[in-house]
Image (cartoon, rainbow, N blue to C red; front, side, top):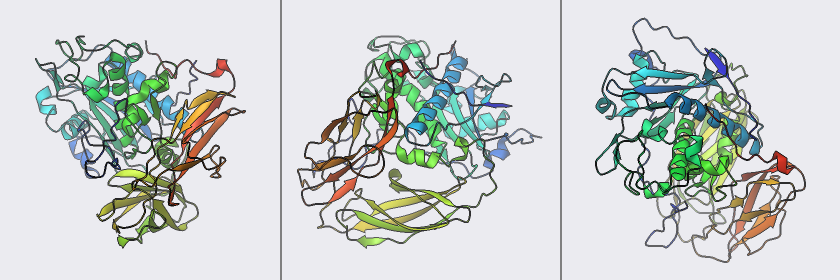
Length: 528
């Protein structure tokens, strides 16, 4: 088995932030439209029970991503399926490399399994024993077991699997059934993960499709079926109305689901449909990263909290040797009824690890809402968050990472007391987020809001990631700036409401390049 890191230099349009009827205030998280299944990893070592008789497990030389393509007994391989999957692995790897650097952690990315040439991504083809209708029932389990039955150790340690399988059916009304998207990981140390999607998402994954701006209504895509596609029937309206938009969505689904295999959780901060976080609804905006010149309103980025966690993730540090698998300890000291302080809920926690602490992430109802770096072997810290609903039980989780990528979680339920001013909910955007030296870029906080309506809001900007705010307080939530030197920076905003409550946003990375010739036409990998 060969593993390879390929380092290559490359020469919601409709928002999901729906308003609640009672308060006219946006909800904290998007509505669940059902495009993704909520899945859990199987019990540890369950995978070994489904391996062939006499199977002897050989660990990989390092942590790596592996790819499987499952074909039921009554199905055939899609045209160019292997080439498409290889292309996805490469663009996936390169995107992470660029985004980790943009977030300040250097060009880190994952390794992948290769063919014997040490370069070409290996696609493990599984000719499954059952017909497609079998795999349409609980694919999360049945497709994984098909791989295991074929000798692929899905869910074993040190491996994250990107799996796609043929099972979709195009109906006479032009709808598609049999689709599935899901991903998960136990997430500590070397534990494995899986991202899985039905191969209907493979149909339009080509460089040509990504820039095909024809409306898809009435077009036939043989890989999907023999009927012409119908807008709003073949695909959801929030996936756009062109071949390009569907292709962008399909590219993003593969990366989104496999990233759950790295133990990344949804994050909807600074996120809208086609414009935002890879692990939010911004996954649909891949084309904006590949072709920023053609799709400037689309953005596809790695959120800072995820980059902070991946910085110590074993899959992103393939050259390191790991000697410790002991999980850190974490305890949350805040629970029950709590008074907000300056509009924020304070959540105190302690953590310890004999090797060294690295990161803490805060989640509300499974969605990431906060992050902080840790250091040393023992910490006593406080998360301060504007993300809460007064008078109701709010379910928080803190995940702590140590320097060797081991993780542990602690949960708490907090009921914020009513009658207190709430701090603003920040929402920032950078357009464009990749610029030349001295080129203007626009920083926007205009989608930020105050849950109590205590306006006007004022904003200050940290322009270089040093957590010192470089601009004066202003009610103009848009700021235009430029940079005189190439590099990467993190940009934050501090929002203040009319009563003085403040919130600091999670940062977004910006890249500044020196000359026009250094600005790539596309972040691109072609396949033959």
